[in-house]
Image (cartoon, rainbow, N blue to C red; front, side, top):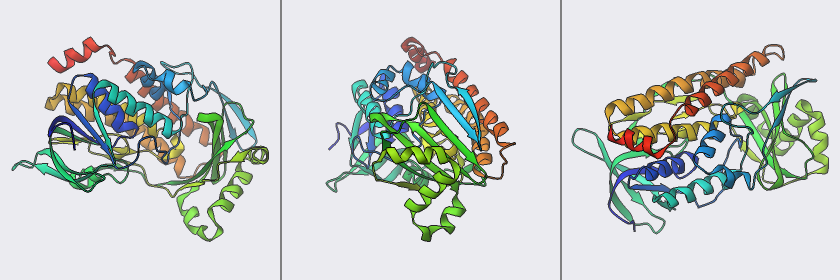
Length: 389
């Protein structure tokens, strides 16, 4: 069923947070099992865009060429505040362009890299329960595979990388440290043949929209509004609401879509308040959306997942209580400003005059994050020193 019954680390979730964590730990010589209930290469709900920190990490891990082969580089962006257009320079610390890969590409690249590093990755498996010592420390898990077979797996560390509905969070009771007050609802589809250069963001009172160049020659075109308004307009129908918000917020974009072709799979995210949870406990740790969720209007989810993977892998390689405390401290310090900025934007309580200041606060938080990651030593020699420390 599995190659062995005991691993150094069991990672629950093989999306971008979990696959990246498994890859980095396997590169450090640890025995890693990574499981996911989904299918290899499947798409999932996502904001697509990687911030500077995410691009930096993919480059340092040697994976950016695989992404760039199927995803256009984004070197220009325009933010539209009502009828005013502001050009934004995209390059930041450690990157000369941004990328917005579909998750069917990004997650597959990371899973492949994890396997190449020696991690065992199994899809179609789910976590049933956690195993514990008498003192409560997590020591492994019971896993159910696609054939209905159960297996007890011993692990020195269980990592929850299983998203917003995390089973690891549920079974550990990982407490919430901070929670936002607001939530945005997002509706998006992928369009082929859209003539648009760079990334475009559009803002008007109470609504937002965007066009993000992504993989396979398509654009992710999204419409956003307060989650409460989505619930209030449920009778209108998602497709009609999507078109109406696009027309109201970005009439030029809505007009350009007349010459493009949608995939026809409209995705609706109903909204979730931003959350930051305790990052680790005895025998367990969290990464990605399981650990902390920032409103999708911040376009930061994938970058946060890759950041958590990097920081946790360094802590787990060392294995000491001080190392895990350092992971939590760094994660909290980098996440809290992003959570606050995303929550303020998701409130839709701003005006077109005050919104740019909130965007500048978000950009500052992302630059601090990228600079923190850039300062980490990426060499294998440094990893070995960390583990020996």
